[in-house]
Image (tube, rainbow, N blue to C red; front, side, top):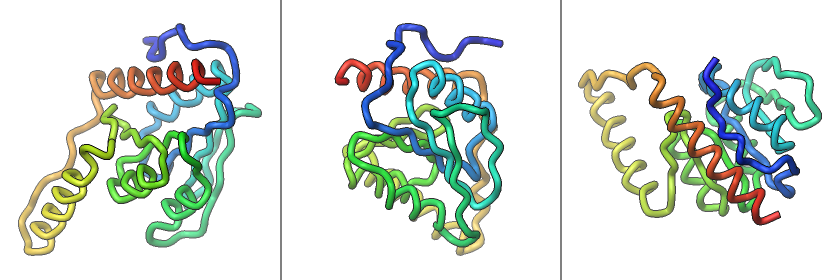
Length: 167
C-alpha cells in the first residue's frame, strides 16, 4: 500500500489539539490515513457519527456515537472543538462553523477551507440546493481517486507538521 503520510512529522503529541472527523460520510480510505497519522504522531483523533464506528485500538483514537438526526453529529463537533483543532468534513456549513471557532477545516479530497474561500463555497452550495429543489439534476461528486487521497494526505501532513512545530 502506498504510504500517504510523509515521515517528517515529529514523534511527539501534537499539543492539546485534536482532529475531529465528521465520520458518517467520510470515506474508509481517508479514515485509514487518519488512523495511521494519529498513531504515528500521537495526535488525538475523534470520529463523530450517528452510527457505531469501529476504530483501531489506540489511546489516541476514539469515536462518539450521537443520536440520529439532522446535523446532530455536526453540532457535537462544533460544541467540542477548540481553536486550532482540525475538522475533517465535506459538509460546508460544518466547515464554516469550525472556521468561525478558529479551527481548520479540510475535506476528504484535500481541499482546505479557509476564511477566504468558505463564503464562496457556502454560496455555491446554497445555489446548487436551490437548483436541485427546482428539479434540476446537478449530478453528484465524482468518486474519490488517487489524486484526492494524495491531496488529502499532503494537507493533513502540513497541518500535523505545523502544529507539532508549535508544541
